[in-house]
Image 1 (cartoon, rainbow, N blue to C red):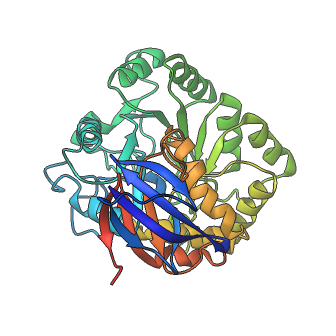
Image 2 (cartoon, one colour):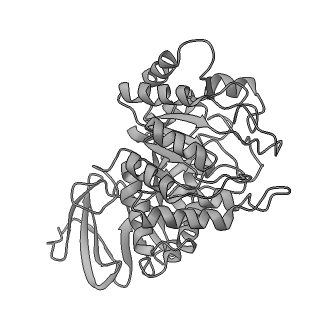
Length: 395
């Protein structure tokens, strides 16, 4: 049993609370709690408490620094050891992995959930669906046979699309992912094949028939409109690095809002490639679009595409929040997005995203108020996951 007392609530420094954590659950969160004699007690006076952070878009088998396999298997990454340690170090207690070698990732997810392997709890897709010859199979995956077998399904070949989606669903995945994209970032400005809008719609409908949400990767506004029309639940990215189409009209914004899709702009992954040789800069237009969507009331997730080159695990989520702030989103809204909205994206809003009694005991203690400056999320003093301290910088 762990008690954290005198923790300040962000935005209300005079409002302090005490949390009672037991059996991995927040048993109580109130200003006046009788502290059991057997409890371990942490005095958080002067510190701020927030829920554990959630990264809505990562690739656990990735490598941001080129010193390990870029799409590594479990045995090559020591059960994703770097990703696991960096996420918890930076206060990220849950993640949604959006494309890895599927058999490995599903077994890993289940072992983390059982407590057999320490790390952030996660949700995952299985093999993603894409056009033959398209992104990422012919681009970043470089047509690798092992990756093809474990991570890719061609939506326009062999079985019907419906049966392909059924097979992925039968693996026990948490969501379906489709690539609806045309930019070849490896051989830029070459374009790659993309599935048809009709094929995309069939994928989304098949996912829903299996009781699963569908995430769609897009490269720009036109593809986002098609994803919204198709009924996508989540739209990954907004304006890709290298895109020549970067602006959203009011009609486009309305279409996305009316669709109900959650949009994950992954700003930091775009910024890190915005100055690539030969690429047109999209950064200012991306910031403008993010502000448009926010002002329109479109739900947005906080994901950073961590695991791709130059986007490290854990720390990049804080970079992503700083990018959202630079786009003009208030810090309090970003905190809501990275906790409550992301919990909904993971399908775990009944367990995560707030510090209500009955939720998982995931929380951070910070040295400064993140509702005033979102960069304060880096000022981590304590990380608790499932009621256990996993990062301690209290001294």
